[in-house]
Length: 340
Image 1: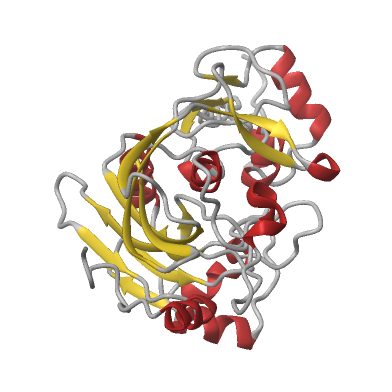
Image 2: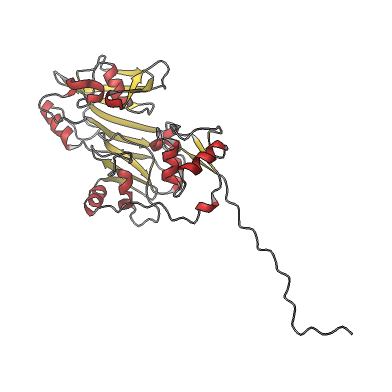
């Protein structure tokens, strides 16, 4: 008879279930990220992805934009789709660190809220502060958005941009779903934006449409400047003179497209640059008696998204433009006052 075993044999080992494979993601470029380099976008969005690793993903075609192979220096356009391959080794990394917001900045930002619901926040952005960070820009709106959580687990997200020196309505999404919906609305031109500007000189005719394509050129000190070009991107702006004085005009601007510096370049192109805008108007834009600041304000934004109520937000003028309006005898504190 076979000899009895003194110890029970261990049961055969079972193979561990394979970990679920990370999925490929496709992300649409938000209007706020238009013009950003692809490598900077990845640095911001994916903590721990090195430049070398990104370059390898680009060389092997794992990262694509609108289905095509691209380089790290590609300038993104709103509405483009970015293919992000599975990156399981990065999934356990902590979220990107954001510097704490000072109590003063937090209080100021909260006081600037114009509208808030479960999905959207609108603030009156002050002139002189950038919306996003960049080389040498440490203080910016994106770095302060934790102050606008209002109890939400998610941090608000930018969905469009304003120039550093432009004030006015800036929309923020409070969650991923609303960010996608707002990004589609901006890319699909379902957003109506109204700007107020002080121009040096009075546009003629007093109402019209500027249809001049713009391309990126180089201004003084190698800084980026938009220029009229037959090979440029379509850029269309409707304008209307609301009131005027002997040397300046209060002009309402409604961009149909959203090119970089579009309003500034277009008003300069028709011979009436925006007051305070030396980049596009030279020294002649510095009118005596008014603050040496850009006089361009995002006065109102209207958004229509299927399945939800419309959003209509207006922002009062910044102090330097209020003083200028008083100087020239212009009347009106909101975008819908005084039509001419």
